[in-house]
Length: 278
Image: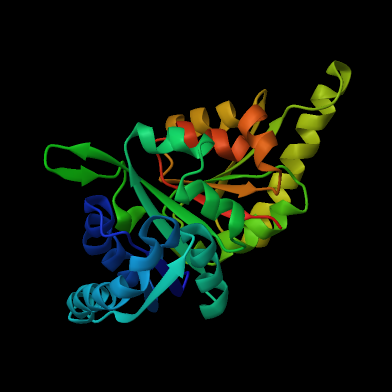
């Protein structure tokens, strides 16, 4: 299991909901250490940022106290700067295994193309990011899966690039929690007359990866657009989580073309574990 978790909070309703209702489940599953972080956005607070620092330190300590009463080892930190960059730097500083970022509503995912903290963080960090995608229900929030079951049936998307090894290394951290996962590869390359041989080669590669992980996986080789294959298969196979790699590309290219990871983040209703490949 990911042992050291970094949880940046902006004290929004969804952030506090996830902190109190989801994070404790992950510590029941084997997480060891929680780092709470708040970043005072220097572009918004400007000269007031340093005056606010002590206030937010106290607010974080109040949250930490509640979690410590549940037996969770919690540390707190306040930074001043640009949120995505400060979160990435904090993750490196503490050696975080995982960053968790909750969001709610479709509008948040439209912001993936407009420069939200979540999308900028994904571009900035070299650490895995778990995006918890909540929907609003009455006066509360809900995930499509229980946090305690998040890692039971992951769909792991692999393109057989160098990135795939980093993805499987991330999956290995929670393999003891997997009941039966899905390994997926999409064949969207090669000539028509090479299609059959490419599919057979992909099946063999997935078999090898499943054996290496030592966990039971269904193996799926699809033909066509990768993002559609990932989302459609995750829904059909009742996955609890999508695991995908994020390759380094320029922001301009992502804005114009999008990437498989960006499309999955935008369109999937399931939580997404994004593994940076840089």
